[in-house]
Figure 1: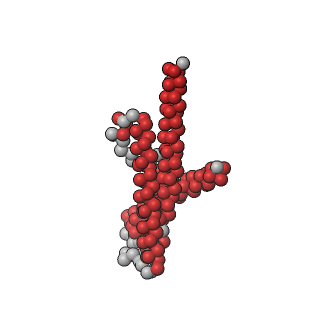
Figure 2: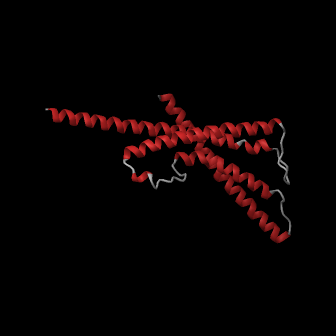
Figure 3: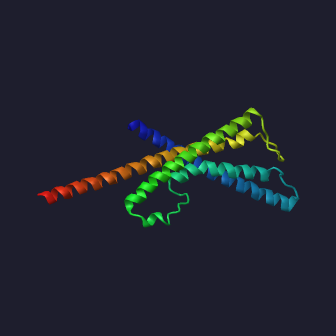
Length: 183
């Protein structure tokens, strides 16, 4: 169990580092766009590839930060109906949705890795101003989905443990009440 705890700590640290990298990328691209606007205004010159780089940066920022956001519960959660259910049903639905989320993320990890590998093998390039190879830009997608999958697995286990503990506690309370009535 100690090894699992250490692995989880390393995993969380990695997702936090990725979140900081996303923040740094946001700051860098914001600065670059500001400088480009000023140069365009004062000297009527521009860096033609900056728009393209900012698009790719948005992709990287998104996938660098999503796993940490998932762990911290920052993703959108539509719970209009779920909050009206009893606690035991809410926990069961949480386990089911976390499991389904894990399955979808694993599928997306596999698919995006396959597409990235295919673009690497075929030497595919974007047909844009800079014409960069596709695979280095796409590489963040399977990595981001893999990190989110890991967080989703952890959330699923945590939710199922809480659900089992609550069910066990309810069963013990029911057994104790039965014993009390029998005396």
